[in-house]
Amino acid sequence: MENNFKVNMNEYLPLRDVVFNTLRQAILKGELAPGERLMEIQLAEKLGVSRTPIREAIRKLELEGLVLMIPRKGAEVAKISEKSLRDVLEVRRSLEELAIELACQRMTDEEIEQLGERQNDFKNAINKGNAMNIAETDEAFHDVIYLGTGNDKLVQILNNLREQMYRYRLEYIKDEDKRQILIVEHEHILAAIKAHNIAEAKNAAREHIDNQEITVSKNIKEQEDIMPVRGRGRR
Image (cartoon, rainbow, N blue to C red; front, side, top):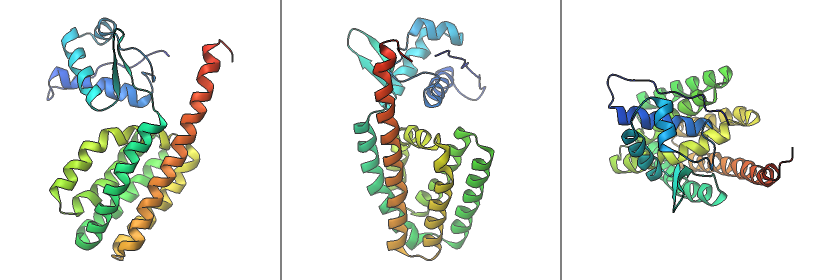
């Protein structure tokens, strides 16, 4: 894969954070492919920086689960596996159900109105078709729910899981056939929260995550079936 990403300097961020954000986006967009080795010297030359911020960025990416350190080989982009997907979504499913229950009980009218605004942003993003923007507006929709719980510890835990969820969220959104379904699922969640119907809201949240798991698992299996064929040089 040809890597066309480049570093975008930000006067408000330290260089190590700029490099980290650049590499993270490259992985999430697929510009750095699963299984691809991360060579410090090559990346430093490409981005026009020293090896130190590259090394620091790789360590942070490893903590997020986006990079693996292989003994005697070095760093490589982590593959998306069914087990890692299942592990992340099992945790997310439980946390989302708790968040939805608390949000139904505690969200104010103003917060519910804000949730409706984020849903409109999400629909607009889907109409424009940019996967990264869709993922970001999807994330913003769920953030309103998390903050609406009024539980700082729960929000902190969900934020810690955010980066690992984001990769699977983006993988799901790449499937254009599923995007309209996402709108409907969000509408179900929004309507249930407006009605303060805890049971319905939890069912809607569970369905939302279950559909993501089914679709991404299918995509992973298809990619695993293709990879050995490519390895033998076939088309």
